[in-house]
Image (cartoon, rainbow, N blue to C red; front, side, top):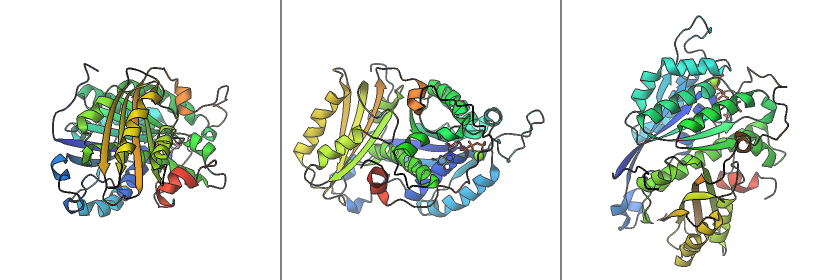
Length: 404
Ligand SMILES: Nc1nc2c(ncn2[C@@H]2O[C@H](COP(=O)(O)OP(=O)(O)OP(=O)(O)O)[C@@H](O)[C@H]2O)c(=O)[nH]1
Ligand SMILES: [Mg+2]
């Protein structure tokens, strides 16, 4: 912990970057659903106004596919204009006779083209990211653009010393050899970013209710991704009784390696116990257990009726769940005046003592033949996961799961 670099400012610039088709969809979903960086002052009790931490969130979409980017920009700018913002888009790459790459026309499932495109546009990408305090990189691995470009961008961010967290989606098993490409890219990315989280389409498919459609499952993945990023950004920005700020979050995420984010919400008599349990055993992310984690950030968000004993309960239990005496816990409490009756627990756990294999992280069964299916042009329409379909949080954390 001694050499963890932290910032001592009262504001932070966070950039959320979506790379390739799935990454661009993720950006759309985040912008549509929104992140609460600033609750309006009138909603807050007086004493919170002092604890406010300024967070500026900027959205950037990167793709080789220019048409997807223009459509996305039009849609997102309509929503962002109320906040006085717009989506920044970067079409990467330049014409290349050797690889057959044409600027603006996509990478056709070839990670090599995606990689080259990012390298050809690296100056523009770095220019767009250089003033960030923290960057989220999000992409679906398995295609050409996200798979090839994300490692290049992650490497550049490491060289710039910017705190970087990757939130990655990995393919369904039936996508065959795309999994092999995803595995390779994940191994690279993990060497460059501070922390990374993986949302496995395959895992979601396995735990989802059996009557769900293909698109429903992808939307679940997109919503988990949304909740993970929203969880981290809101912990930093939302004012609290016990306030966690950027430096705390940075201490947990800097050089954190595999990161688990858990989210749990509950109401009723046993709400705190229930919410904590759900957050710790987050079925939606791979490796759902905080055992072995050295650094943990926990934020409890409740209504004004949140009880002292509830906060104490979380504080007392969380460390024992890691099974480590040296675990460091950062505990925050925020109060949302509109959330009476409800508690939400957000957990980010990093620096696990055990080493995880890429197969563990991606949920790939042992002895699986992954080369059988050739799917270089396995296509997803760019708006496939854009509409609201799920009934809010319940949909994400309950109704859609087989066992709940
Ligand atoms: N959950 C979810 N997964 C997606 C979505 N779109 C694609 N994926 C997954 O992400 C992987 C990569 O797909 P894309 O993001 O479309 O690929 P790309 O990076 O644009 O690559 P090229 O189109 O070849 O340049 C796929 O194999 C799918 O497993 C989406 O909207 N939601
Ligand atoms: Mg694409």
